Length: 166
Length: 463
Image (tube, rainbow over all chains, first blue to last red; front, side, top):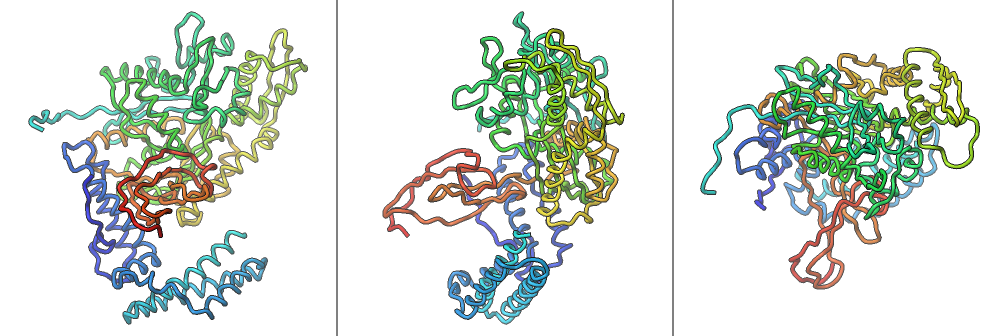
């Protein structure tokens, strides 16, 4: 099996390492890259590089999946700027964890208008998480960014659980 | 290699084949569009019916369908509902069939005709052979390569079984293509349909819905959902139950002849109910009695409403999985014969708020689309590209019989994934991996695709 070193998603798309991407341009770029490199358009060729084409196409699909999602984009950028930052900053503030526990309980018992209000609150919390994450990344406070990333998971999980109830 | 064969400059001939539950057909790319390969009399649809005649011959298509009542236990239809599944999975449904289905080795279903045991693959191969012969006669040249379609919701075992059927029919299957995706290709091939399309495909035995985005020749599947056990056959079944209930009671199991006759009658009554508001039925079964029954469209609709609702639930899920809302759908395309039922049309229109597109023939769209992708794979057309997804998640079994999903459903393919796992015991040098497909949490509820042993792990203390 030929091993092609995996490149980071930003490099695959020819982008600089930045949280800000133009989503329309990103999509256009994805379609262009796919057209240039897809196994279906090479299957009839006499080329021996079928595996390379396949791996490159997978790389393009995987990069697209990450880059189009602002959260995955942020995580990937963080790991590029400081490899292992997420693993190193798993320990969260006990006060935050206590709050998260309360939130989970609130989700478990929420119904009717209370659920709607809770949904709005969680969405706000996630927006605040993302803004803070962006701030940490801009200031290159990468440990702070990693912590905020982990914290946001509790809000995402709570929102998911709330959606699953309805 | 020392010598390379000369590169062929002539266009490669690859046909598209729709191997349907009820009917099958082939098509070929022609000019800017595609055309169906018809039988000598101009008929395109080949009934997916095989009759194993007592004289030893086997008949396929219309001649076989015509023998349904004469040889009820030897005439096999809807074999697509059995292919690639286990005997246990199809047992409940098999009891309602006039032909006999038994469990063969490894719990695979076998159709028993006289003392012969036939696999669903072998029966499907006979249908494919007939499609191939029709294509060869229409084209005036041999056909060896094909793209064959399957419901998007088919799992890997069902896809592999379909591929095996193609091989048995002497066809090299270049690709198994999802039916709704094929239909979208047929719809969008003229190059004027950029936008977001919902394909609602309700056939004889299966239901699929796919959401696609078309951008300047790139057809991108965003999500797909479906039910491999929901289609026109089930509507026939509901009508058949009414007919059977109206027959004078008789002891013992239902005679295969009665089953075939009642099914045929139910199907024709269903078809008439698409145009008329009520349909009469007079069925004379000789010694078994006779029945006169009127079914109104309202009664029929009330009976099938729960099944139609199940399709709508799939639509809602597919839209959600695509990360969209219903108002972002630009066009609704209906495929499959069962979309002729007025209730189906009305419900999908009510849900989406869109009048369904009627520019593609619901019976032909899948084969036409398959021929377009066939032309791409043959290397003849580089102007369009299809980006499809996997319909069901793939994962491996972890401790305690749980499945850890590695590649999630609706991931665009090809794709790759990296995940770290720890060894369980000190100095472990190999690990058995079992691959599963499905959305359920436990391995026993998912489809096992295969197993392999990963060796050569450097001995180290377990994590």
